[in-house]
Length: 175
Image (cartoon, rainbow, N blue to C red; front, top):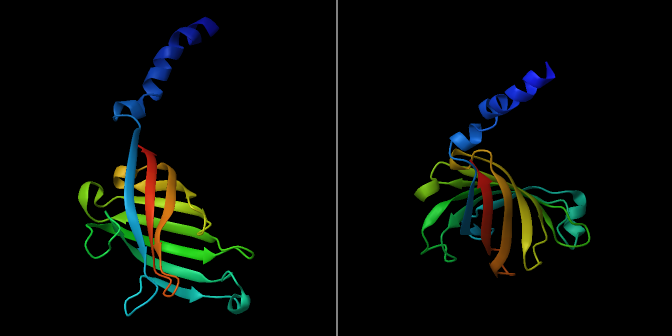
């Protein structure tokens, strides 16, 4: 009986394992884009929706919850760069002693090669660090079963208005 199982094992594994390979296998994709967080002006794309009592006296904004629908573009200039989609989700001021955000957002692609696909990004964003890394935990469409990481680098930050442009590099493994 054991010998029969040993003989059949390659056939059984061949029937079960190559499902991903038959569909073209795992792919790696790198996408560089710019995220525009607009908190000022008549049409903000980031809106505070909740705050704790302690938020008013916190030097880090601890406890503030912000909902975003931020533009994603191919280049750093929001007005002249090709639009790629939107970053939709929330960020929460989660650092009590240092400014850091708990990010929860979906990059929704609305143009180009990945139109209709999404990438889910979650993680800590210590906004004053030169490079921040967050997890890619899923996706849809072209990025079904996505995993990987996103690196964020501040391109511009207006300390008076709070508006920011951040370069994101997405490193995605998907099928």
